[in-house]
Length: 527
Image 1 (cartoon, rainbow, N blue to C red):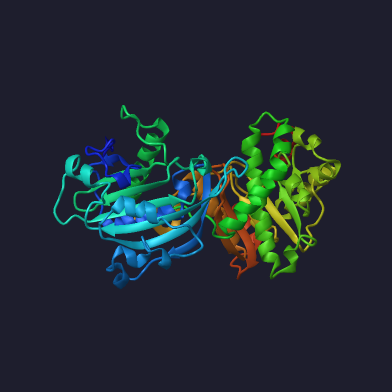
Image 2 (tube, rainbow, N blue to C red):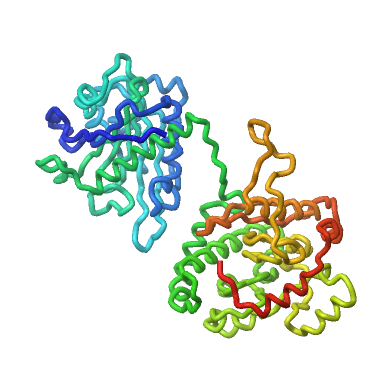
């Protein structure tokens, strides 16, 4: 992609009229766009609905109002949509009248869509949510604030068509603007569809403007550049036919997950990080397990509405390969019953309350199908209580969170499960790479789809789960890990194979028991 070179456009070449002293057009991209009006509008609506794209300090937007008039309505004047006409406005939200009338002046503009959103910050202890109006506006003449710069810094074309997106935070002053939003009363991103020019303008609060020497606050200018570049990038992506490859929130909705995650983080994060005794990064592991716990709790709560087996007083979870035990600690602390298994005890276990320590077992799970003969059974018996021998109850839910050697086994154990694959192993416990060409899948050119090694492992687990009768569901978890693909088996479906058939087709599980014994003697690995 061609490097974007912005043009600084402040102060405007002509002194602004009295009514728009607080508006300044800050930066522009002259002729930089290779997309059309429809591409720009599609991209901008997506950015309005997903403000987290522009800032990592934001997790989402909650939409309070979204109105898109039909094409007949779009032919009307600006006042027909409430701009400058107070009586036609929703009484629930403050008017944007002053900002729009100052910016556009006498220009006839059509408000195509009005969205009122609440921007939800990632850390509510530091930042407050922000109520904001977002207006998608079409106009055939440059707005009054843009007239000077479009006539000088940019090529002016006849019959130009403009699209402006105006953002108006509902605040009474600069002290109410959170960190993740530029400290301005309003801002506008404008696209001229014929000349392919883009511009960003700020409306400053009273008492704040460009300084006399023409230097704008550095953070405001950097933010303007980022907003302009992001709008350009995403509009170009729409024009190029970009399709989102990763889809979150397929099994558990975003809002309940993020709400639960914030609650868990507030209750447990500080204590877990403060007491961390492992050599690994506490924040990475703690926040990851908090997010997994939030996902599971919301999954179980939703399922419990129609299936009593998922109720907190009935479900029993088993974290297979529980590692540091943090996930077990969180789920027990939140009122669920269950326990964790791992071949090696971790130092973290000793930091937990006694009730949690009692639920963490230094044992290996050896599936029955991995003990194929009497000799193997005798070796397993000799290990005594180091082998997990407790049968799973009917309401057991299996969790495989980066469970390595046990990952391909979990769908074969006959209980509902969620597995998050990490390192690739065969049923024998040996390291193994699965075929990277997805069976039967082809790309747009008809070539076989080639997967990464990790993607091939995920597809293998999903294929095995479907073969033994699970209606497979998938979720790309919102966790701080690149290994974030979750495979879930919650409902039964017609089975093509028995678990024993899967093991036989894989060449058997010889060596799994011996490798489990070796694993017990090794120092714990970290991820």
